[in-house]
Image (tube, rainbow, N blue to C red):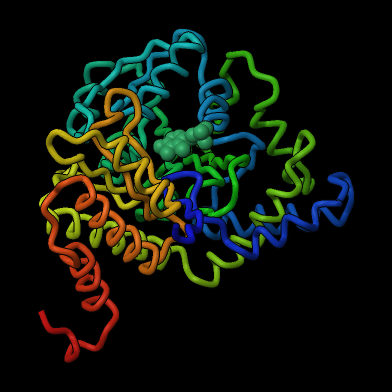
Length: 390
Ligand SMILES: *Cc1c(COP(=O)(O)O)cnc(C)c1O
């Protein structure tokens, strides 16, 4: 027997920032008091700063999907034509929400592991001149692929449609210039790069998107953007908020502000690159080789091996929780996350564990091959040039 520490290495929930955990213990606070309003106002202000936008930013007490639903139910009307980019399980969630609320969705589908190109969005907008919105995932967590939201925004910005982005794993893993690129609605979630537990969703809303809220007629109650904005302006949440999570968020935002959002993105990008190089060095195949994102890397299980075995062995041998594939990708891929509070020490461990698991399952592995690839990426990025021997 060996000591096994549990390590959460999935693309949501992610490893927790220790000071946020400590902050949560102070949640014996009433939400309609000046004490809480001070905390809430600071969190909203810091969130805006970290997202780098002058648009309104609202917080909802729900998982990320709640904000996705809120965007649909508050900004559109029954029968509105919309264009939905669907490149994985989360793209399919947009399709399902749009359908649940009676929108007329033109679905641009990409194979799992692939992405929807900006050109296809342009063609779809030209073919559907009345389209009211375009929906996409910045980072499609189920496949590890990332969309080119900047190029898409340029196209959509010339039309009457609003651009609604599920950036739940895009925030903190890729540059997202909300104001500069014209990203109308940007959605985030607490259990991703914000390094706190699940239960909060975020949304930034552009003036163009607010105009949609004026005429939208779909039913909604709990998720009410206009009401939430009014509450937020008064330093409150419309309903009883998850005070513990707001306290956690405040602490995490202090860290992200101090560290720098651009550095957090760079960190994820570097870990993602190192993971890809390690996988290739070990003779493994990437699931989304053409448009890899930096929130998570999806790796194909070796021929003849179920990825569930790899995921299970990570847990039983080392206490490491990594993600299997979702839906039809289950059993075929495994996913290693990079977003939020992940560091190189985590990745050294994950790749060393992976080598041992492959060897334990009869795969030929030269120990250290994958780890060396990660060390090389670290060395090139962070050691003085003269010390790096390739
Ligand atoms: C995690 C995630 C969501 C939100 O899922 P919830 O379970 O509702 O938090 C949505 N989109 C993407 C791309 C995600 O990674």
